Length: 266
DNA sequence: ATACCTGTTTCCCG
DNA sequence: CCGGGAAACAGGTA
Image (tube, rainbow, N blue to C red):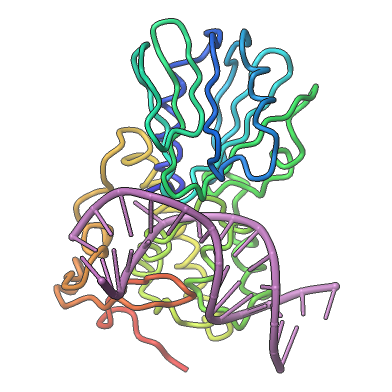
């Protein structure tokens, strides 16, 4: 599930552990989420206090006393859980932080997620150098416009998934944006009119903010009239035109669109 | 059994 | 060096 808003919601599971010390640390023996880094260093978290929890796009950063920084990416199937004390690790639990009366868990069956632990006086470089958030006032039309100019031959679907420009944009969000903008996902930026670019920008803001307001705050789903509810399997119906949707691979990803609303021009 | 999958990185090509 | 596409990663689910 984890795109922008799901990541924000997952983060709230660990916010329940703010300002409490870590009593013990469990790390999975072979999970790929640690990549090739030494996982014994996670024992440094023992006795430290969780001080802050933030998300930016699909990235998460947790800070602990002792100048420790935990970077976390949920990958494709990762999720954060808040469990009662006495919880014993599931087969796919990569990291378990035990606190008084509760336990913070990172579980990721497919192990495409990633964990990294660093010590330092200030935030890690990979965090301070992150691109402008789609939810920020600094996220402006120029960012989209520059991306379009730089990647004229990429299908828009693939461009929207580029985290350097649209941090947090995931597969369902990109489909939602293009559907609302009435632009075919296979369309190349080359042929977008200025008017279409403006509409695209507006819908990026709409979907990012709308997702945060629904999914990000409460968990669960976006509003009922979103493409989201129709895009997951064949046979979906376009909520705007009431005609059948199409699903196919574009930009290497499963993509759903409404051939009635989104017409590919050359 | 077989195909499919909400993400990223790496490798290869032009 | 670059932009773009495919494959690989790994296990659950339909």
